[in-house]
Length: 323
Image (tube, rainbow, N blue to C red):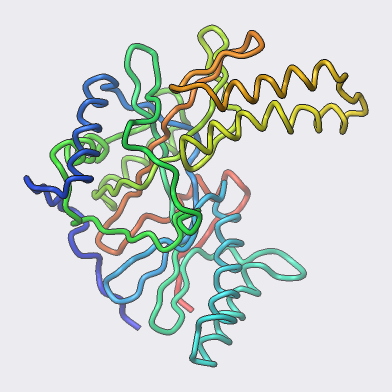
């Protein structure tokens, strides 16, 4: 089966009159670009999978640390689709068969990143993460950032829509990201070459909803500690680090915490929940919530899949073929 190309993959549809909520978000972004004018890579890419039906691409699930993990997520998604939603018995059978090859009971996973099943195309996708930075400070949450609803976890069913209306500041950021490359000297030469190649094959950029990382500030270093899909969730996870994780960790190590320590940690958790702003200082430690933006490169044939170096990093090399 032949699948349509992605419409508008290399266009940015800038509009003057956004709806009020979108206009507020774009204005907020403009303020942040002026305050935090530089782009900084925010760790290794994430992986997930997307589904094409007609000209439309939607995300199935994201959050895997490598292509292999994304294939396991795809297998789980195919099994759910076959059992709960697919009405065609033959298509459902094929979905189960593909899932068994991506997540077999015995043996190794088939490292294949694209499958055509019925009227749908499934592809493992690559998501890059970055943060805005200015004066050696990474961007905190924006006033317009909110926690996503539970049904939006892992970007499930999120539409990949390059020509969606964009404000002037979103357009500016996307243009800045089109030619964005790793910082020279920070990655192997092959990784940099693949990044340059991706600019030619997938020249479009789509911004995805952000995530939020809690970092501990130790002098000039910022060490990631925990994170979440929303800023309030990130705050709660930091509080639970003190009230739940630390006591369990010591108990697991065979050295249960003293009651005084537990009381201090519970007090720290309560103070974190009560604090406003992106920074927290408790028990002589400093923490900050950092906004981690996400982008997906798109090309004529849809969203970008894993690069060769992504596969080799984990001892696999995926293929782009049909079933």
